[in-house]
Amino acid sequence: MPALTRRRSDNPHHETWHIYYGDVHVGTIAERAGVPVDVDQWQWRCGFYPGLHTGQHRSGTAASFEEARAGFEADWKALLPQVPEGAFDENRYSTAFTAWKYRMWDCGCRMPTQTRDGLTTCFCGTEITNASVNAHIHERHMELV
Image (cartoon, rainbow, N blue to C red; front, side):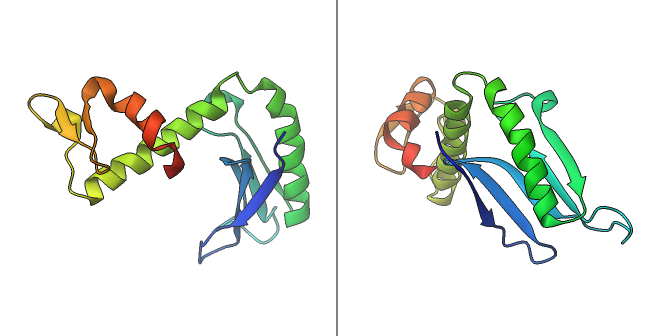
């Protein structure tokens, strides 16, 4: 079972940490922006999409980073057993698809949906169709995650 890890965000306005379970971004712990000084200064959000429904996500506030981290970990511990089979794979595919799509655009390639016959060439040189996009990404581009 993967451990939770955190990575500092490059947000220049307030301290933000992205939380990962293996390679899936499952939440955030951050300083709250624009709140009065006499209320909790930290917040966490726990959950990921696609993979979980919005109603499954959890969040809260805390006075300190350490309290927010503890709140996140407690919510994650309660949420993890409810994660449906395949949710992490669904999230990984969605992330890979988005990276592939932007790379196609950056390389000047057309999407199959942008051609009259639904046929195009991927930036990797493979011919793809509307029907073969998902399989192609699974086979060739999951490393874009």
